[in-house]
Image (cartoon, rainbow, N blue to C red; front, side):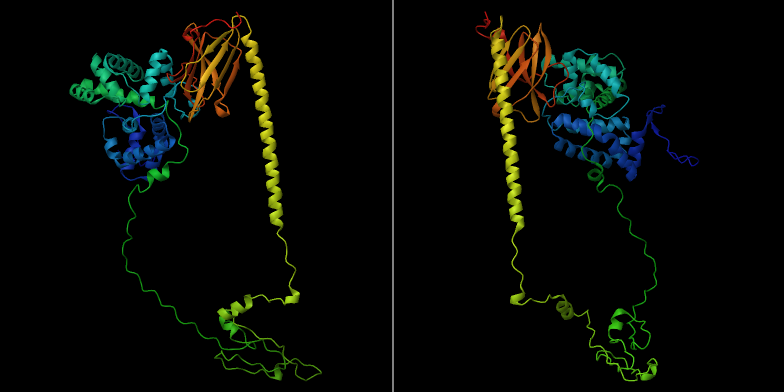
Length: 519
C-alpha cells in the first residue's frame, strides 16, 4: 500500500479487507524492506510478550532471553512470509514464539496468571482485563488447567485428555469466538494445536479436518485466542533486546560510486628559514631553534653551526644612545634542541643527591591504617554476630514458651508431619497454631508456604521463614483442622489454591493416636 503524499502517513494494513487495523503486519512489511526503525518497533512491541512466555515455560530468565532473541531474529528474517500469512501480524509472530518455547520441553513451576504479584511485571494492554475476566469466571480447577496449558504443561492422557481439551476449547471460544459449525473434535484439536500441545496423531487428524474452509477458520481463530493468553505472561526483559536482535539486520553498507577525482598535490618540503634574532622570526618552532640566542645590544651574535643561514653581525649602530659606549657582555647561556632524544633524556633526569643529602627513609603509614581498618571491620562483624545470636536465642526462648503454653491447653492436639524433607510437628488449638521443623532443605527460587484446611476449604497462612541449619518456627493466631506445607514460586502463591508439590502433610486423621495433649 502506498503512502499518502499529502499527509506523509502510511495507511495500516487490514485483515481480510475488513476495517480491522493490523499495525504489526505493517511493521513486518516495513522490516521485510530492511527498515531499521520498523524492526526496532517490533522488538519493543512484542519483545515483552515473547520474553515473558519464555520465562514461564523454561523457568529461567537467562534461557528465556536467549530464546527471545532467537525467535525475534527468525521473525525478522521471515518478516515478509509472516506478513503474507493468513494470520494477523501479531498472532503470526506470537504463534511462532509459542511453538519455539514449548519445543524446549517446559521446566520449572507453573505460575498463577491471576495473582496480584505478576501483574506488576506485565505490560499494560487494554485487552488484558478481558482475559482476566474470563479466567476469574472459571472454577478453580478449570483455571489451573488453563494456566498450566498457557505455560506449556499438559500431561493428560486417555479420556481425561479429551475432557481437558474441551475445557481449553471453551475458554478459547470465550476469548475469540471460534464460530463455524458445531464440530467438537475440530474445536478440541484446534485448541491443543493453538497452544502447541497437540501430539503427532492429533496434528494429522486436524490436518485432515482443515481441508474444509470452515474448520480452517476455527483453527485460525483458536490461534488468535491463544495469542491473547500471552498478555498475562508478558514480562519486560531486564535489558534492552535491540542490540542482540538487530545485529546484522538490514542491508549492508553500499559501496561508494567511483568518481574521477583530481590528484592531490604532494606536500612540498619546508622552506629553510634564514635569519637571526635581529630580524623578524616568522618560521616554525624548529626553525626558530636554529637561529640561536637573541642578540644583545653592543655584543657579537654567533650563529649555531647547525644553521645554514648566513650570520649577520649586529653593529653598534643598533645600540641605543648612552653615555657608556663600552660593550655589555652577553649572558652565558645556550639553547638546546628539545626534539633530540638525548636532550629529552638529559632534561628529564633528576639531580641525584649526594649521600649526605639523602632524606631519611619514610615509614609506611598505609600499613598501620590498613591494620586499623581491618580491626574496626572485625569489631563490627563480631558485634553483629553477637547481636544476631542474642536475637536468635530470644526468639527460640519465646517460641519454646509459646509451644509449652499451647501444649497444655484443653483439647490441644500434637500433629506429627509426614515429609521426606525434615521432621515436622505442630500443636493445633481452638484459636492458635504452633509449628516447628528441623533439618529442612530449601529450594532455589521457591518458598515454603503454609496452608490450613477447614471444612475442606484451603486457607493461605503465609510463607514460612527457613532459618539456618534448616529450622522452621512459626506461631499463628488462627486454627485449622489440618496443615499442609507446599513449594511455591517466590515470593508466594496468591491464587488461593495450593500447588500439588507438598513438602509436609500435618493431618490429625493420619496420626495413629490423635489424642488431645491437654485431655
